[in-house]
Image (cartoon, rainbow, N blue to C red; front, side, top):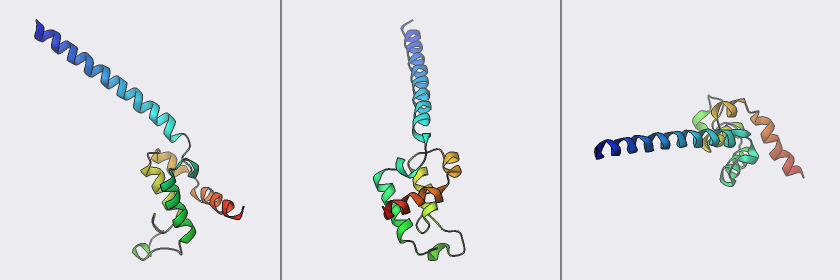
Amino acid sequence: MQDLWFILATVAAAVFLKITLELLLKSMKEILPDKPCLENLSAKARAEVMKVHLTSAGICSRCRWSSGCYECEGAHALRYWLKQEGFDKELVLKLDAEAELKKLDADDVD
């Protein structure tokens, strides 16, 4: 009889943990991908995007036959770092990265 109670308690605890984790993940998805943009990046990621955007001279040698990568093209760098920081990939792909990077140019003029 004690074994039965132990099994029931274990199953109940597992179900409770599963529901709690699902709710936590759901709430995180609602909060974090609210607005994938340059302002919502961490300081390190923002610095990397700024470095690539401001110092890039074009396509790097590894991708010269392509459209660029996160190390040589600002828009790709922004999308890369947004994905790395956990923003929803579909929202990141819908983002107008060029418009976000123009904010950096506007900040430099001020």
